[in-house]
Length: 157
Image (cartoon, rainbow, N blue to C red; front, side, top):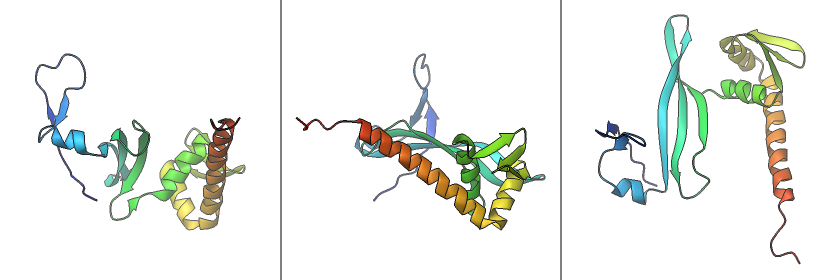
């Protein structure tokens, strides 16, 4: 496993396409198996203090899995990727956690106002966080299995 970290430069005079390029020629672009574009899209604050980053990762190239996927998550300073924030985002996306304005609810009970308060709630109540995670995994894996069952094998006669 070899990881290269590179920077982006701007190409001058580009009218069409992406004007951004990476330094070092074409060798890294051609021979790499996976290329990720990682960008900071915002900051996570507690009051006036910045405690983390909102991050977007785009898969620019992937020879080992489907390319052009995208993920967004929070990276908290000193802690890493926030699992609780991911559970909230995926729970809202899968309609397991209800969001009305700034309020979040789970099973009809309000669990917090604002994402930061809900993250604190899930850290203090790991059983609820585990319940949400179990339901998310079951729903996402079930949808994958249904899609796999819909595809008929080509060898079947």
